[in-house]
Length: 270
Image (cartoon, rainbow, N blue to C red; front, side):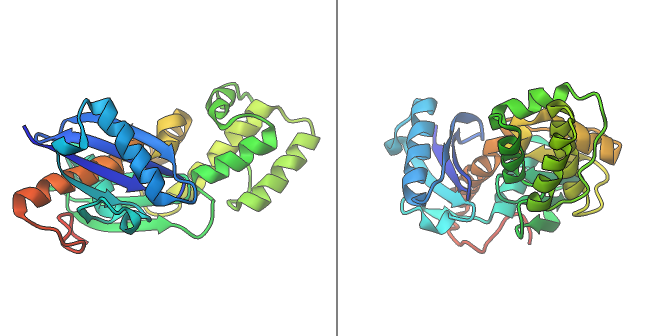
């Protein structure tokens, strides 16, 4: 049996996954990226190896993805985020699909055909709207840990709206609502509605939809609100936060089989 690994070097967190030659996930890890992307990749990879019960000597190849993919010295090759997220989702779910990935600093909408080939994509990188950092800012304003926000939103009884997508302006709106005595639970749900409103405005979302990313993994309300906005079921594949790292590991497996180490030779079509 051969083993492969992938590392997703994101701006917020770094994820790693170890798989066997059949694509089964044996171990994963998530760590904060911080300012030293190479060190974060080392930590995530070491933890994923430990969780998988394997050592570095067992790994045939490690491939990287994410915005810091070219900073990882031990990577044998790399793929773009769009390729790896699409590849990871397509392993579990048959297309055609619309993949919505909501990360800490960006959001993506990726369209895949029935064979898992990428047809188009949209990305939001210009501001925190529609990303995890928006929820971090809202949690800070509410004086709670980000991990408590989903449970808090479950207690909403009044439908409030934040009219702005912008994190700065939404924060100001939130302060106004706090001053008027609105309940924290209703404010939390208003923040989720604002985030989802930004996401669904990125593209026409119809057909089968899959959701991934750290926000999806820790905030199930986001998945429910996307489903309600699109009037359809939203499927969350296994290990949604590590799906990019998983896709990179699948790319490593495929590249070893095809003897391909080119960053531009994407198996998921651009």
